[in-house]
Image 1 (cartoon, rainbow, N blue to C red):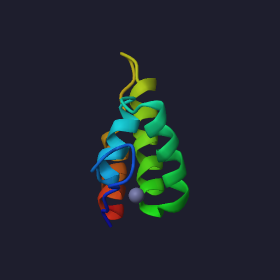
Image 2: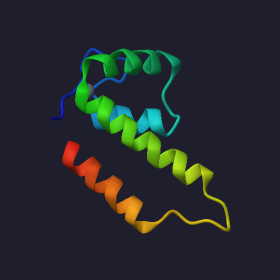
Image 3: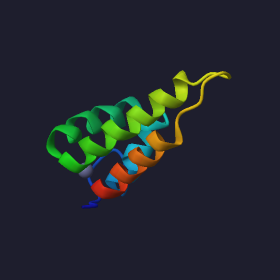
Image 4: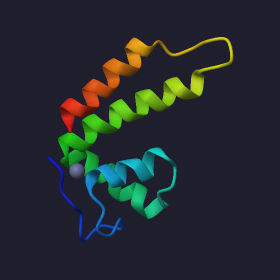
Length: 84
Ligand SMILES: [Zn+2]
């Protein structure tokens, strides 16, 4: 369920585009405030955000001697596709 947010600080961005900006740390504080409010109203955004964050955390905690099991990556990307 993709919808745009024409009156938001994100301009014409879709939920997915907003999510990407927030996860990448590119959103302004105004956009972040809007996003947080939006999460409370938009279940698909909230679910995707949770999954994206989990992926981000895993990537961050990876070091040279540990690798994320491919099975976990596959499982998460399947989840993302199912929600989207
Ligand atoms: Zn949304």
